[in-house]
Image (cartoon, rainbow, N blue to C red; front, top):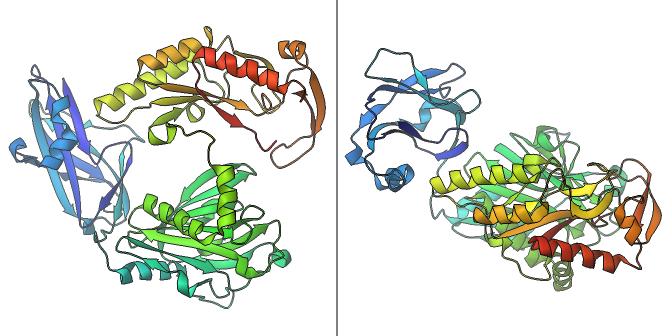
Length: 495
């Protein structure tokens, strides 16, 4: 049996820092395998739209560097293996585009056979070339990165961009941050006011509001990926190799007003406040940070915002944002069922997927989930949609024949230490089923739900009466505790 190890790995995006693109291919043969590899090629589109092959060079495994041995993970290969290694180091200048794809093909020396391919369609390796930034770049470099974040006005159709506040600069050897203020702000008249036009960028990740309480990511090569959406935070991939983050907010009333970006053509950004601000434009700020790594840019961004807000505002925000009890979830890897199953979640599906994730993760010596959230779809409801009503507190018998206890036990055998479940604040999206078992135990009250951006149709909804809501939650959470569930994800809190 022969296993193939390739770097950069297939099926994912890898950032490669200039000036060299390093390719490594390892053929790991078992002791009984007699196959020997002859020709090996990188098959890529790095030279343009035309795909072509580039031969790799056979390397003595004894010359393998410590870094390459770490990637190969020899300790996981077992005894009696035989390794054939091939390499190719190319100058980044050979790549016509900063992003390209590749796969690997090879022939054995035993027969004159057709090419063997390492991946199927859609599972190529994707490479993004990034300029390398010095470990300790001078402060002037980071200051210039922030200055170049917004273009100067280049036509009569665009007003001047926002200006930085003179005393707001914070610069170090690893990044910089500042505060921008808009030159003019007349939200009431236009609905959105010009903030600036982004400079030379390679990519944008915008965190935008899908509805009043749901934020979704939108990624692309320019800001148009978030057209028509309220954007609360923008992460920008600069052509220089650095990353910048921008976030608008109301300095004097952060909990009463929401300030967002709206995107326009040619990477233009506009500011929009809701409700409309009656105060002076000086209350609007846009925090900006730039760093070598995206997570550092976002960390520095929020640190600057916290420094800017009045202490009373910080205390008010903390009261809303800090959990009542500290949890261990944020410090470990977890898994949520939603993006895998949506509402078609089940015991068999969860255990099957987590078993595979843990198997692959441990084989690669990578972290595996320590906690799991069973999201929407596990409950006993009239239907799985926005009009569905909760009939009983127990799990859906078709999806979880032995209820949640069996699922919790099966996940514990995989190493999962905590399991939580999703539920809506008032039970389920459409409230409580007035004809179900819960309605026989608890008094219900009828309400008329009005149209809003999150609820597209007006409808009648039945809810547990306030006189017995505490008893309902006591029963619900005691049942969950008995099933082995240790935390909850409460949705629909804006309802």
